Length: 302
Image (cartoon, rainbow, N blue to C red):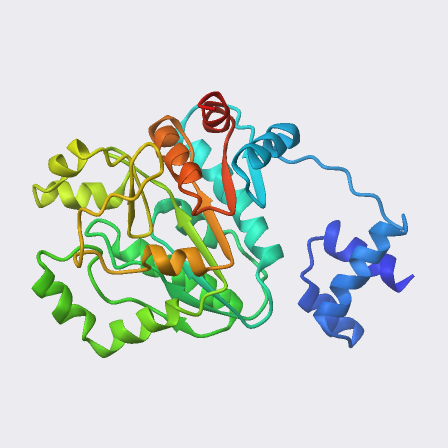
């Protein structure tokens, strides 16, 4: 009876496991196990009526084709980029809520999708949150807001990276990375268990590309074939790293990203199809959350 009660309160009435745990005088983790047991034993039945359903067969095909641990392909009702971003963020929020472990260290990249994702998380295990890149000039407020949102829900420590995403010179990079707060965040990146990053689509769907355009440095990189960035890693269409901004970008390095156990990439829409393909070919992604059009384009590219 208690298992069924916990499941109904959580699944039907939307009460958090913390709230139910306080009422029953038990831990929220025990409440979580009770809810799972109630579903497994058939005490409650869950019927999916998601406003943004996932295409399971397409997700499996994409995961198998590119050797991913998991892929989630959203079926969006329209091709509107805002709607696509919202749908991907909704799935991303659910995935993070369910996979972040207790006392984990979670890294967050920049972007509106990450902000939207973090804004949808209502409950998550206690974890530390680390900013994975410096601020793009047009995104300073939203990047910090996303980190603050997740950190507030998780009730762990927050490690902001108070620096620009790209510096004007290697000398500037040296000066900025010697700042104590920057050093602390960069050192913490070495220990993250999970990285959540949006895929930057060059040239029109990337905050970094916009910032480089302001500096009149975008065109040479486009000529070198850059179509995407993942963290501070620039990629060509084949997924090869393009080393065009050595000692200029501040944030998670390619080597640090490769060492991270769980690497989640979020991105979709027409402006990011080539970028997502590059990210998949790079081998830097373990979990991809995208839309149907982008998934089909990636499968067609095989």
